[in-house]
Image (tube, rainbow, N blue to C red):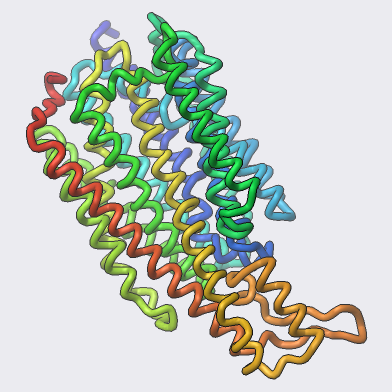
Length: 527
């Protein structure tokens, strides 16, 4: 075999391994998308507990992927990618056997650590092995397509298995995919970029603790109350730690994150738009899942089908998006993409929670999917092709951090907003609904305790008001309370859709007006 042929074979094997690794990561990440309603009913979760299922995966994924990028640069990416797949195996096994929602959280955390490796390392491997900027752009487009395949098939698989009464089997499928990823990666070319790179422990610690504190406060505050001392303290601690992270990064010789990259005005604008736009994207996805699953109790399979319309375009349009990224200014690609995400959110905000016609979501979810296809690939290409190749690991990790931070904020902040509002409406109307229900003491006190402690999600889902022993058997949950909870949740998530849509519109405006004088990023030359 000639040297050129061997290099080409190594390129192909690495692209296959990288694409399958990101497919695995996205399957593991997206699996709860169709299962939120199933989890809510099986584990009898509150709104915050349900949010933590997704957040438990997203938080470690976000806070550690910069460090895994550095580790890959220093010690090689191939073995690290296989280690990420092994962590996915471990986390999925825990989730498979989880008997409580707390055990499920642990499984999600471990799998999230695996994803913190799989996302940035797979992308850095593609960038490092590509023989030219144009080949790198094509590989990135394919990588983004496989990311979307994982996000499409995972909820569909989970929804189908949940409809068959066996959602736990979906985690066995993830384990099998992880084993395949480990085997495929064995044939990939290794790469590293140790020059000028070292582990930044103070930066990693302050970044991790800061992000965890803020995301914890946002999630728990939705039910505990944002005015509670521990919630305020967590917000303050998070902001102080993130400020310390910035100071550390500016002063260290080899930072975890090269903040000077944000001195480029166009890059900084795209970075902000990425966080806001990806927040809007996942907030819309999550709200749709909660609306149909946890609120309306519709089949998880229907939700899985809708995720095909969300994620399918990014795969179907791989060639078209690759062409657009190479030949059009990021200003227009990103503006159109974010505008479509905005249309989706605003459109969904007009739906009535009493309307059980799930097919009304098809058109707005398709708009959401096309918008995501245009934005995610363009964001990645802009980031990778505006830095020297030796910084590809840092750039890919930074890009993943921005995108995934937006993803993590999506369900956490939108659920915090919606749960807090729904519980407020429930408590405000509870007295009147109890009066109409005909419920007698001590059941009124029990129902009041459920409303106060577990919120609208519990009242909407519980078939009975529990009793207290044989002399006080359970009684059916009054229709007046169910209706109040349903409408409180419906109104709250309608506003959540609207907030997501307005955030996407803001990202579109930012790219349209902020990038007006930016130079076209030519992915063929990197200029």
